[in-house]
View 1: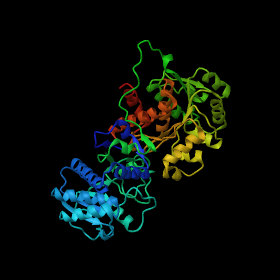
View 2: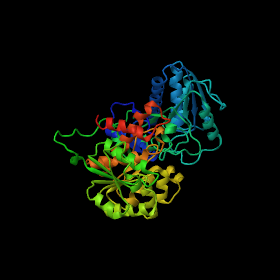
View 3: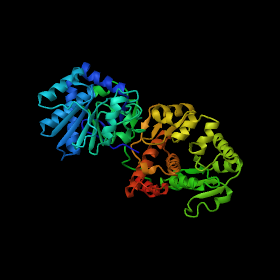
View 4: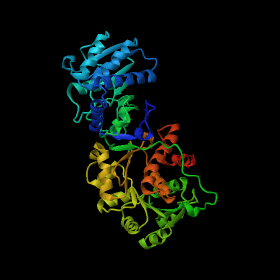
Length: 502
């Protein structure tokens, strides 16, 4: 599932809009803006509150009532600014300080005093719910949270999540880890998150998209030197806005490669079939399938363009690989001796490859490294490859995808909400496409075929993986317009063809 994301400032370059940062890096940017550029901390806080209030006005223009939950740090200070601006705009405002105002310090204390000086009132209790307001502002916990939420704060977050109105989080939903995108026990489910100075990478992968809702970014008027003061730790992949290069009029099928799909053991032939059609739909010139003899003759009955071969020995597979450009191995492969022998034969060839599904499960049993392949595990497969639990994979997906790339070489794709792509530079890229309807059988097989098809047409390894992930998710988003429930992998075929021809 991708995160809806937009930028409030038009001054920002496209490259910066894609940069993602750890929380400590954004704090360093904040200090740079204050200490080096000379923007006062309270001025940044006021700008943050103003950007958040502008987002409220834009998103929920008819709202007349607003409540704000204020913690004891700068996140709470931002909320006090929003509350003051809402009060000054004539809204009915209620503020609930979770940390006593007497404990506030620095800029947060100034923001609180500004709110009180404007005539704003404070409620000294936390209600069981907030049904009296249309918009609820989450200013409870900021980006520095690194341990599980408990006690009063957990109770407040649960109360927020019972609220039936609109929830806006400031900088990051309280309880969400800013670096990893994992919920620390319990986290606020926001419909809108307004984040400041630098994009926090946890908003875009794992549980982040579920809790953040739409992400709006505000630079707070900081100059470019602020963003250049630290290096990003990840990047967003750009949205799929155009297809592949226009083909020359003299083109023939040999110009666009030959994909060989290896898989489809008895009972799993559909996986190989879907991967093969996906490679064809994104434009590969020729598609072959190496599969079990028992069903090779029937596998292409509804798609006669696919060349299906019954293969029972490595020798038979080698003859097919001699004519191939790219290998896609794993869809429906199984874990039998037949599967192991075919995978060994693929590993012995120098052809670029895409490995998925049971090829990865076999790889976990016999790890090997390769420079010219793309591996595409989901969290369960990644856990087996790294010999950890799937929970540990999801706890820090950025760390997991880097380890996959380091251990197995080539390019690693960690599938899931906010799929990650990591190549030789070690900088993970995060997908912005996809939706929960794609959580169904066969979607990974389609992705394997998409990446293999792009490789066959000349894309380099990393580009094929990155473009393939975005294209696959974009096709899923288009197919989901008819509804996420019941979305099938085969429903992506027509959108794939349309999108590569934009």
